[in-house]
Length: 135
Length: 147
Image (cartoon, rainbow over all chains, first blue to last red; front, side, top):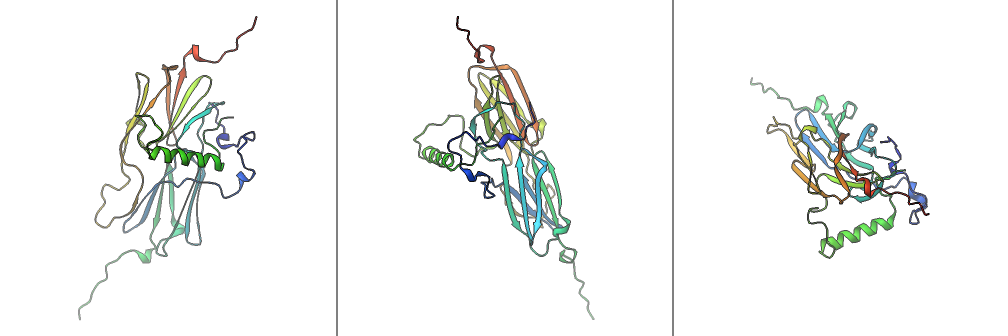
């Protein structure tokens, strides 16, 4: 087994390769997600098989949440692919966050290729009971 | 250099689309055991001179729940993945998306005759189940000396 990161390296000899393969508009997979919300905030689960922590990028920009990741599977040298249902190692998905969510307190954990994000609600946006006074 | 994934070239994408269309209309026979496309877990299969490598993309599965077996030339991968929805979900838990697979799964892969069921290893790494099956000695490539 070699731990090469070259799983996705392009084969320059293939005749059908296009020169702009390395352009940023590469084809990405959309990972399936589960999204739940309770009074504390939103929890998001995403399937990212083969992704390690250092190849996962979760960022918030202008109120949008971006998840980008790359899978790396260690395989023996000289592997010839015969059947592929997963044809891309790149995952990407984006969500817009409502203003009631606190993007600065997002907690992310990755286990067995599943990303769990917890996005808390802002304190002032949490439900609270309002006392009704009777005079 | 190993290449577990295909490149992004447009021609192979068209080719794949065409095959999927052909499959959808029943023109092109697929394995009777392969099920519909998009089944969980997705599987990539490759081979080297010494082994057959099968990668099942099965994130979030408890390794103990996997059942991997070989019987009569069939590799069987089964198991179960629980739902991410919290157990104690009350009425105030709202579900916005439930796209991830949950429940029992099974994939069966037909192995070639030269697969050796006595030389199998399986590892679960980062949500990928990697099954490596050795090839029988007689099927390995060898150079023949010309006298």
